[in-house]
Amino acid sequence: MDFDHLLFSGHAFRRMMERGISPADVEFVLHHGEIIEGRPDGHLVLGFVKEEPFHVVAFTDKKSRTCIVITAYYPDPKLWDRSFRARRLK
Image 1 (cartoon, rainbow, N blue to C red):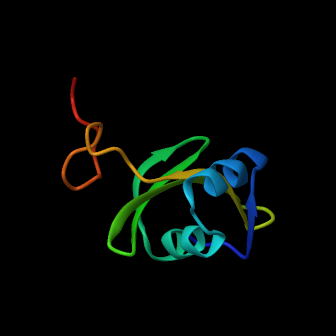
Image 2 (spheres, one colour):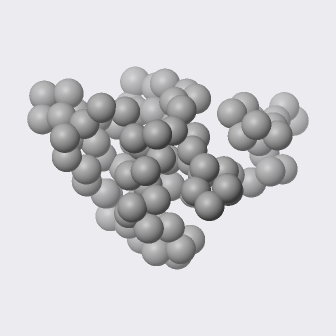
Image 3 (tube, rainbow, N blue to C red):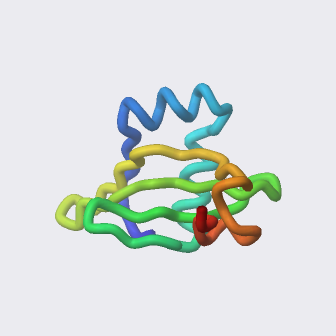
């Protein structure tokens, strides 16, 4: 993703702290990860941190070139396929 500024929502920051996820890990995934879902309200980005799959949900305000992180998490292998790019069908 292309942006000049990075902000974390209160929800994102709380959840990151609960999950042991650092802001540096999130920024790395946003710069080097793969957008696996595009949405009107943001993107789901897949990256790998310490060889672990990692998802970040964020959107970019194009006018201010600010990326706002909504949440970040380690995807549950029960809910995602082996590539962590697609949700498993129920």
